Length: 465
Image 1 (cartoon, rainbow, N blue to C red):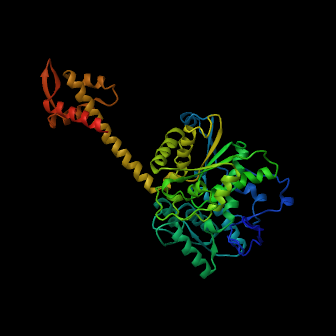
Image 2: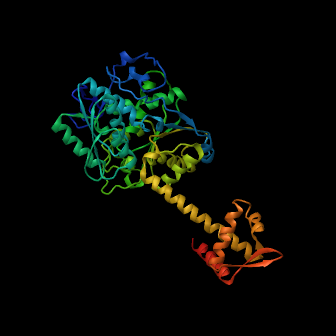
Image 3: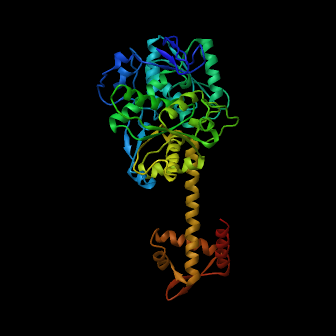
């Protein structure tokens, strides 16, 4: 059955609906406790291993989703001064995001109900996943995308032959269009915020964490519309109700500062969030103005005795690079927000150093074009900075005494080729910052008056930074 989280009213699972006809509350699936008591999982680790705890489907569409790694992040944990940190790496799904779990269940359900066309509003991962699974199942997939969308995810939709339409600037606008189109055409509504099966599919992430590790003390989850964090909480809660585990984790919801509607609602003691007038963030996967499932997110955080906090875009990018450099996992910005939040919580001692923590990595950074551009720019800046730094070091050595190429190479720690050193020396000479002369069969260099002025200017600049 589908049950309203507000008034408790129950409805049949078909026709599909997302909100209560009596009070407008969000509907979620509720299982028969008698039937699922004593359930046992069988088969290899993967999504369909948990079929007994999912809404019933006869068709099973699969690309090998689920069974994703739970990485023990030892180097990252050491940097954050934590005893035990794990990354649930959903980038290892077939289309590189956690939404593949939902796409598998939704396309299976669509086949069961004899639909041949799906409609979905998405700003990225859900659209890419549904396009792929629809292609596998021989279904037609219409994806409504906003103007602001990650190009890497849009490229996947195009490759999987989805029919793509742009509507509005952000996801909220695209969802309104998808609702209207589903009502007009009768197509299967596969928008994540509007189909309760999505939460059922995504709760299997928690099942896997329990089988791979047990129950951690904390789980950090990025929040956009609010459904994902509730999925994680529901999975742990169900395992406890079934007696499979004895504990539940505290759930932490994380949002970017520019669109933190759920975090703000919790701070005000509200049961659901208000609309943000001008939402903004580079983490496009969680860019929403009015989270449609904020009531679920707030419920998960409160029931788990958890927390919610916001992080800046600069903190997110820094965390993204840190995850990649220390653990070899390239996460999309929304996922990296969990590490940025964990750092703040650890520094504030709200999460103790001896805690066990799992951060959900929802999707791959390779999908986020904006981040790839930022990294390319950073690489170019780093190269330029390295050249300036090397030239400055040469000038400082020559400001103390005249020297020659080989000696300068040794003084700089042999960190580059001698040919590179001579290239720098030639460029400094051309600019009149140093002067070359012959002595004892060697070509020596000395700093010029212009070179000394350049060093003085650099020192003045450093005082301003």
